[in-house]
Length: 128
Image 1 (cartoon, one colour):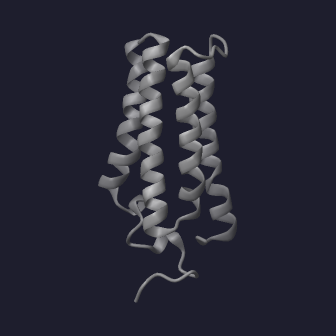
Image 2: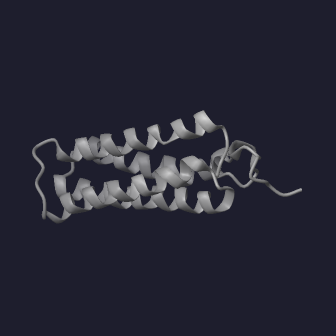
């Protein structure tokens, strides 16, 4: 039997969120690499470039997972991570300067929005 529109996304065997190795590869590793930039105290533009690449990687995982299992959270968080990549990419390029805490604010806002993307899934308890 295949997945139907009424099947909860979390029940889909195609959902990478149910596979620890996929979770680690698509979201854990880029998160760890981004956090590592703070530990190394890298210059702002380098750290922002690392975060931009990490967000693109996480967005790719979300968007592919949305295609695979149609999880609502992934349809929302993929574009959120892409937006985070754009903002941190602008910081990395030096085209914008949003202040001394710009990178920290951009990263925090991106993760907050990604976490909030679980809310519609919790409310409706299914994917589109």
